[in-house]
Amino acid sequence: MVAVSWKTHGPIVGSLGLAGDGDDTALIMSVERAFDIRLADDEVSRLRTVGELHDLVVSKLPRPMGSVCLAAHAFYRVRAGLGDGARRIGPRTAIDDLVRPVERRGLWRRLRESDGLDMPPLAVPRWLSTVILALWPLMALLGLLVPLFQGGWSNRCVLGAAVGGLLFPLLAFGMTKPLARELPVGTVDVGDLSRAVLALNFGRLARESGSWREDGVWRALAGVIGSEVSVVPERIGRRTRFI
Image (cartoon, rainbow, N blue to C red; front, side, top):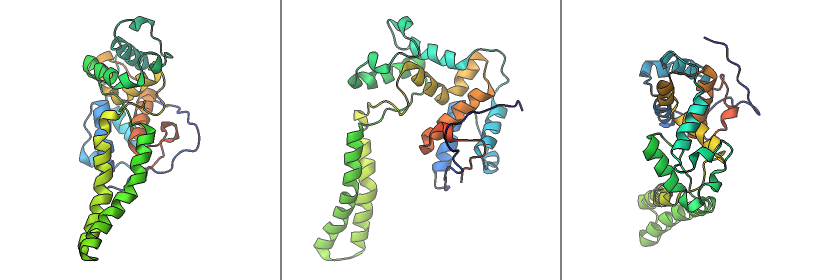
């Protein structure tokens, strides 16, 4: 293996806290999709740290044949999808200078369709997320009280509280998904967007260009993991454990 130096900012996370309740499976599937590889169950079962996953991902990628900068390759792919006037757009061009917030979903759809690349998901407005989270316990309480008033305390009360508490956030966030137009965290300009796109499509772009570097694999992997477990990528280290 080639020695690679990774710079980090802030304390390294000791554990990602994956408890084996499906979030670990979702993480592996995201890694497979991002790097266009397949990881065998026995290989995954032996993984204990992010560094071990990185080494496994590197072993699955085709041998690099060129020296193309993947970050630049991703930027030009994204820029090409922006349409007319794209040549005037640079990495530091603010996304808000290109489209208004209400037009972001259309831009994301256009980039996805023109390039066929996965895009980082837009988020619902923060105020709407706050409202949903504030109503969550109230809906659980309502699910508890309705059966109680109808027939006294019973298993129906427990079931009602469970249904109200579990289904409400799923339905609420699902119904408000068409309103998602907030930029992903840390995405301000076209350069940020290009790096996010690279992390989600590293394998495909590496095969197209025939080029990749281990430090690029690490940044992409940390980005994918950080997105899945809501951890700043810079705080993920080689010794960070999954459990």
